Amino acid sequence: MDLHVLWFLLLGVLLAGYGILDGFDLGVGILHLCVKTDTERRILMNSIGPIWDGNEVWLVVFGGALFGAFPSVYAAALTGFYLPFMLLLVALIFRGVSMEFRSKHKSPIWRNFWDISFCISSTLIAFTFGVAVGSTLSGLPIDANMTFTGTLKDLIRPYHMMVGLFAVATCAMHGSIYLYLKLEGDLQKRVHGWMWRTFGFFIACYILTTIMTLVLEPHATQNFKHYPISWVVVVLNILAIANIPRAIHLNRPLYAFISSCCCIAAFTFLFGVALFPNLLVSDLNHQWNLNIYNASSSHLTLLVMTIMAGIGMPFVLTYTAVVYWVFRGKVKMEQLTY
Image (tube, rainbow, N blue to C red; front, side):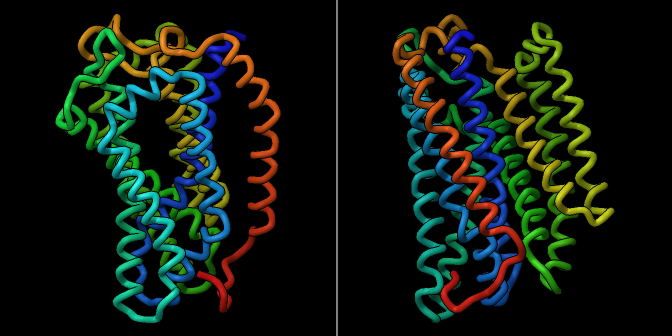
């Protein structure tokens, strides 16, 4: 296989893995303030406590892989999204600090501050990633030197904001289904209602985002003419979305969660199809697009990275599987938990 195409696919796998795994983490954070008592907020944090930092490994690997395989894209993206990425970094830091610091002091003011910080940072992370996806789809002012020449206002457009809101809605739905799997008792019954409300919010955002994409960014569907097999994923995505309320109604939360995971994977695949073979699109001149060939590292670099990925990825997958197996089951409150 062409190594350029292979690394485009591997980046998609890493992005989908991060979206699925950290997506429900972010969803739990987005929904954190929906409960009021200290015990219930601790339970929500403990539902992701053993796994949240491991889930972020996928984001770190994605960033490293992008830097190694397509350094020009990495440089242009960091330049174009400099302020959003700084906000993202601050949010990632505050999210982790909020979880670690919250229960260090019993003061209600102290704990409320970190609860709000946890919710805001989780929401901001999901929203920022959505804005980045929307900006990438619609294009950025990139010149012939592969340099971002725009300003912050080029990133703040209605379509970008809509995709950001859609990302928040997707994470909230994904997180509510995960919480239903992990909780029990009265709190689990209340989360059942959250699943319906977040799904309704998700569907509304999904329809609006799809309409805006077809109207404002019609080029996003051009590759479907060249790769008609991609329509299979569109159909499967619709079926996965339809299965979520069905599974909730039948009280089969695991099926709903699997369907939610499939939706995120499908969205990532469709995002890749819309871009391919580009990684960043120039709205100044399409000849200045950064694609998998003109923005890549040398063949030797890609070859070495492929060998290292073949050695390292099984360890990452094994570690992830072991952690989820060890911490399976319902959340149990203990003295030394979050």
